[in-house]
Image: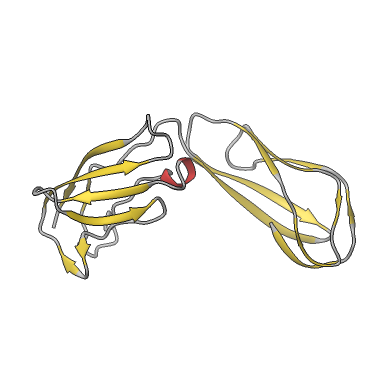
Length: 161
């Protein structure tokens, strides 16, 4: 984590348990803050079969922050449908925790004629459009290329209007 305005403060080693998702611990080895700007390297250990976010309240030299660490479940659940109709419910299609589990993955979405209609990163969501034009309701297909070549994801999405 980057910081600004370090003051050569000596920090003792610390270990903090997550406040939201149990089973995770954040730790920092004893170190000295650089004068001026610098960064701190924390370690996170633990595991959970469930997904969620592990939160760690950190206080260093009287400055407080809350570190959020997304945790992917063992098995990703891919939404089967979405309805980009502007009601604020299921308006975007994305795979929850994909970025936490496979941050470098790429998602390709195809129409029924095998035409590529969207290419996303693990961090993106699809709004059912191509270059600002709404696609018709129907079934679309996705392929997720992950860094684990033995764990590619494929399936269909129903776009409802």
